[in-house]
Image (cartoon, rainbow, N blue to C red):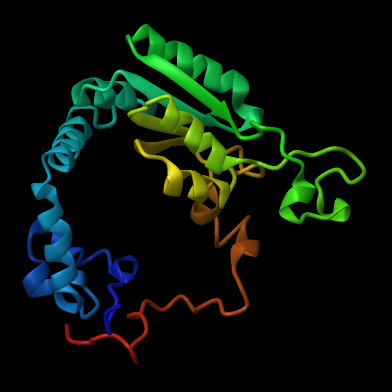
Length: 234
């Protein structure tokens, strides 16, 4: 762990120096270029791996070619083709089986083999994870736990080269990402309240969804993060 941490989310709109190649000159005191250049160098060195370099290359080309033209579904199909993947996995919430079926058919129409595993695979009772009856969504009923590690294992064993996450719960998706062997992407991020559009809570954090703020909500004055711990040179 380094003594200083980058704080890119605090960068003012008028700066964003890395976007125009001026991070060394104009980056704020918490810019990664200034607080952890070693971390940047170590990350960049990993692109020496031919596979990772190809992922970065094809992703960048697709970003430009499909910019504001291709849906994310289309981008996934193009990416998998250019990477030479043949078998694609779908890790789906059981509540998204129909949408995952449609996705699977779309993928198959592009020539991919599709493997899918739902979150309730194995039907393991929640009690086995220490969940009490009054902690269930519907107390007094049988509720199987979400089983993302087994989902990942099923797709690993099927030889999936690329996995698409369809609305796995917060935390469950984390376990899936940690245990999946193939590359992963998210097509649907679950948010039951916002129609699976979690960014809306950020767009409307100062109006309809102000409840997202905690007790230490900052004032509206832009300021640099953690001045006591970060380098504060401009």
